[in-house]
Image (tube, rainbow, N blue to C red; front, top):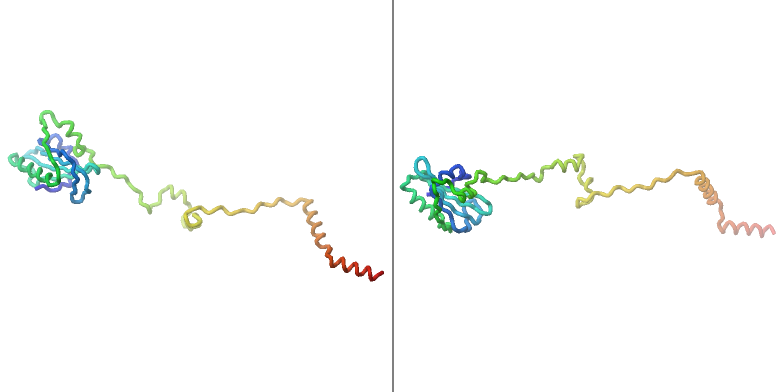
Length: 212
């Protein structure tokens, strides 16, 4: 029986111990527990151990570049049981929709180039996650752009919508009054005090007629 081996992230250290290898000819969509539904490739890897062999299954997702490893519960199995365990792995993949074939490996010439090109044989298998700044954390740039903590935010942003308030209008400064301006102002005030209304002229005419 094959069980998930979450502790395995890469098979790079064991690439020199690969004795048998199977790979899929197709890429069906696979839905494993805790994994997205994606197209994947399937592999069976038989590793030589000090005592017996370890049989591992690899489901390699193509889009997310994640590899899920399964190991047989009897690992390491003796050489006489390797064929039966490999057949069990083939049945496991057939149920998922894979079609596998065995690739020849020459132990004398070392691991072939196509085996080294497989992503799960790479030492740097895991991708580096990009750190994200939480939305509620104020960045240094925002702190410099809004100095003066404790102020009302509406006073800085103005009306609803985040637009800044227009600067207050200033009255034009008046130039200092000259001597001619003061004299002209006094003349205007004197003219305003003289009563030249029609009623005053009528009274004057009546007095003149009475004198005659």
